[in-house]
Each structure stands twice: as structure tokens, then as C-alpha cells.
Image 1 (cartoon, rainbow, N blue to C red):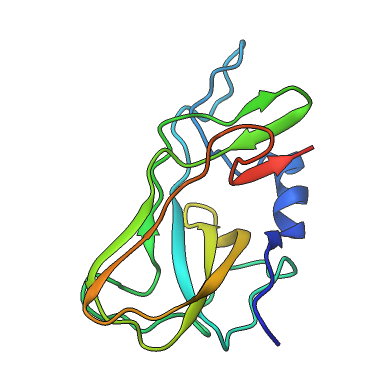
Image 2: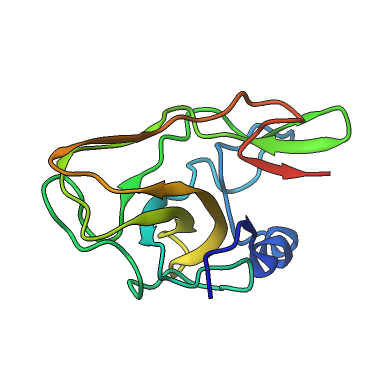
Length: 155
């Protein structure tokens, strides 16, 4: 089974339960969480089977750690809180994800976002064309944070 992009169903329910804090509290009155949770981005092999049905991060199918890539991925920079654009809730990390000087352990086509502050609960699965890196840099550039392009959109 191939990797399949989507916002994890468990994440949608957990949002309504108040499990995740993807940005600092800006509401009045302020919520009790003033510091965002730590979100990470990890890369997965083409042969992995990551989907929106996943509920928690797992190393199964993840790239092996070489060079600057370590299993568990990179910490996502979240300086901007989630917001709304029209009737759509939006969130895009404020910096691209980048791994330098690494060699991939195989072809990969998937990035998983997960909340390491909340028992590694999975947020979303993002797919792209198959990549292989040999002693180089791999960057996932973040899209424009709007209702059409934001990395996470809830309409």
C-alpha cells in the first residue's frame, strides 16, 4: 500500500477536545496554553503505508538516520498561530523543513507531521514525488498561508 495524503481523522476529533495547541493563545479570555506544542516533521519511504487513518507517529517505514537526518524528524517552527481566512481555518509552519548533508536510506515520498508534546499524536500526512538524496540537502518549502494553499486547512 502506498502513502496517502490527508489530515488525520484522529487529529480532527482531538482538535475539538482541545488536545493540540499549534500556536500561542491569542483569544480573550486567553486559554491556559500560552506556548504551542512541539510539532515534528518526519520523512517516510515510498514503501511505507502512512495514511489519514494513522493515529500516532511510528518509525515503521521512516528513513534511517544518516547525516543530519535523525529518526523523529525536525522540529517545526510555529511562530504564527493558526488563523481563519474567510470560513477556512488555516495553519502553515513559518519555516521550511530542511535536512542538509544526508543520504536517504531509500526513495521517499512522504512527510508526516505529529505532535511530540501530546504522546506523538499524528496530525497529517503529506505526499510528494519520489525523492532520493545522496549526500545533499532536501528542503520542503512551505506554501502560502491562505485558504487555498495553507498546509493545514479546515473548511
